Image (tube, rainbow, N blue to C red; front, side):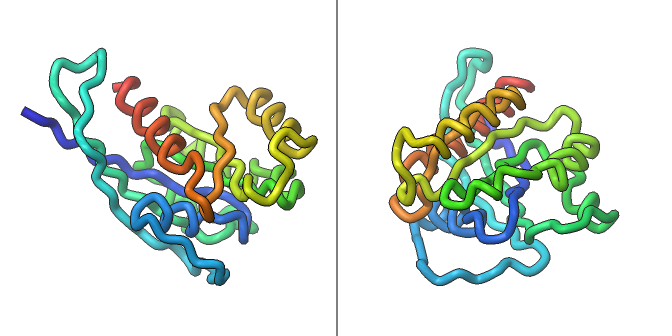
Length: 177
């Protein structure tokens, strides 16, 4: 018998980092070069194939309920309402714009305050646009290490490491239960 587990996940990050592109790649295996800014929130779902975890005696089918949030310039109560009940977050940065790493606390701090037990993964997107082991990649790895958060170098365009990042978040959430 398989248990189905549905969890709310927030996609956080500055404008243009690729949150929507990552969701589209993960859910539909699609990529579009055109940039369309998200307005408000867009909710998408994806059910994963069942897996058997060491801690559980039966298979678990993880269902992502992905909340792709528009860029947050100023935190307010409406944003906190979007965060409520989240089990995890994928915080997305753009490796081709190192400034996207500068101030994640605009959304990360209120997210953690609203959901202190939520699991978080950092995603450095647009890996296909930078030197594989260049300074910006190392800067991002050090940034993630300083926050004690797992990180993945991804490309929504090619699909590299997108599934791995989402699967790791699902694994972290399930292991915490």
